[in-house]
Image (cartoon, helix red, strand yellow):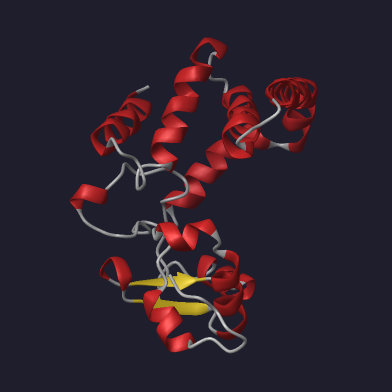
Length: 195
């Protein structure tokens, strides 16, 4: 995307910021660092135009102001070809978010999570052993995703027999924007909602 110097052209960098750009994805950290320190709320003209809230304090403020910063239209770029199913509670604003969160909270209570620690720890160890055996790994897919999916499966009471299906749905929903098979991603999202 842009090669940063000691003093980047922040206006140009801001306007060209594109989290879907493969060049930026190879090494996004200099771009994020420059924007966070000098322009924590950036307006990009890419992908049809969008606001990127990159600073911690600015994100905290945005999360607390759903009237100005809705969670319901967070996809970039926008349009039917990029649309994906709602992912509650993430894509809900108050009061719907609050109601769903209240329903989900008991599943994520400290006591419930503590009871599941041995299972989650066993999955973590198993995932590390698989990585060590191969000598190489994609940390997100081979370590992070299995542990996260396993934990959520247990916390939400999803049958263990459906864990692989659940993992597929999570992957399809999270990767819908970069997926080669967008229709397949959309079908997976709809199936997860129906399940």
